[in-house]
Amino acid sequence: MSGDTKTGAQVDRALDMLECLAGRVLDGMSNKDLAAALRCPPPYVTRTAEQLVRKGWVEKDEATGRFRITTRFSRLTFRVLADFDRAKQALEAAQRNYTLSN
Image (cartoon, rainbow, N blue to C red; front, side):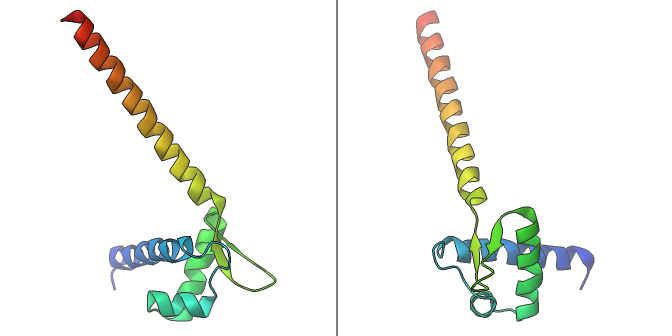
């Protein structure tokens, strides 16, 4: 497998893992659960989860060993929504200015 293909597979797995975990915020998922959901070997899940933990997207509950998504994910969503709101306000201002000038 070439480096680009391997990297692409790792990125895909990380994004798929985030999607799985987004639906399990309260109870999280075990390594075994994630391996089954992602249809990959458990060591792949471990490596991917470790990277997501390092980046702050996922946390591991040390008491249960289960992974869950962090609030970083929701903060990102709020940033996107705020940006859409700014774009909407700019468009509305441009429309008002256009109407007033014509």
